[in-house]
Length: 225
Image (cartoon, rainbow, N blue to C red; front, side, top):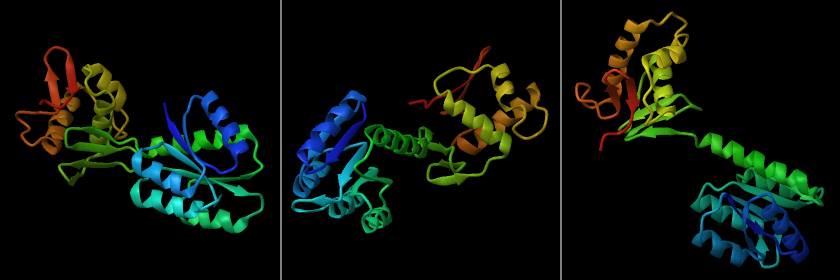
């Protein structure tokens, strides 16, 4: 369950949004003041913060600044209709989105889900031991150093990491990578590229701890403890 912190001082809006978010399957925590919001942000972690700009003891901007100092939790500002300054200031502070009051409940839910989807995609880093691959940037790191891979090596590693812990047959791998380099890949070529990939990602290629050969079956990517 994804948890949302709702920071809003209007009790009617607070209750209405809480019911709406609970119906959508979110966990909801609430804070009617800046002080309470800051306390909760310091004590718990949230997947998203819905943040009113105007609070009785301060402003949502101070809360947003505290969130940015402590976490990368996405923020959606709730602003008064036509308040252009608040919109610009909120986005400049790193808010993911804003929505003007009065708003349509379904539009708000849609905005929340879009922000959470974007955030999930941005965090989709694949890893195995000290090896990481970021599909959004194409960067592969091993033990703190960047690893340079060819298009086919990269595709091979991506498929293996996406299926971590699962044995992939040679036929399955060939189907996945045959056009990665724009060239035909046969069984012998796959053997060569498995060897090259091990040389780049393993500390001891002859005794691999990440990319394992499962005799008679295929290959499995899994860290050997």
